[in-house]
Image (cartoon, rainbow, N blue to C red):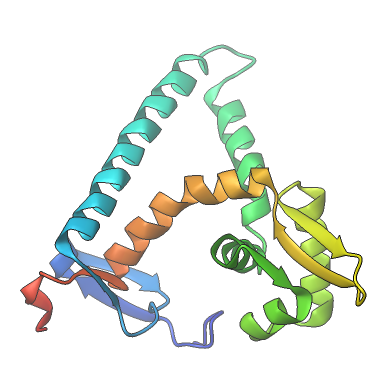
Length: 186
């Protein structure tokens, strides 16, 4: 089956990252992998660990307040789903990632980078993300008049919060590797 990024989904078992006997659907990460020096790789892993610890503490605080009838576990799950809803629609993650990494882009630059997106869809998604307070439309008076898009401060904060998750997944799926790791045959 052809996936969202124009590649076949593949089932695999990845024993090198301690996920033996696990079958899951994934979209392969881009080649070649990014090899980081041991010190940089370990710094990323440490920062991810701190994020996981902080996430556990935040979860504990929220759980301690989700015990009453008004704010039950059901309420908390619904609030979490509503909070994350903006990230669930097609093309949203791609647009936000593009703006987080590139900082600022013009409409046609994004359209070229996000192969497969129509002008109408890109326009609609940018309008939606602006209404959610994640993206800003900046008009330079010119001449010529130029329009570009960038993340708002809220969008940047969301990007920074998601960066550890993205880094974790890049390591897990093999697109970021430790250059000192000889187990990959380098």
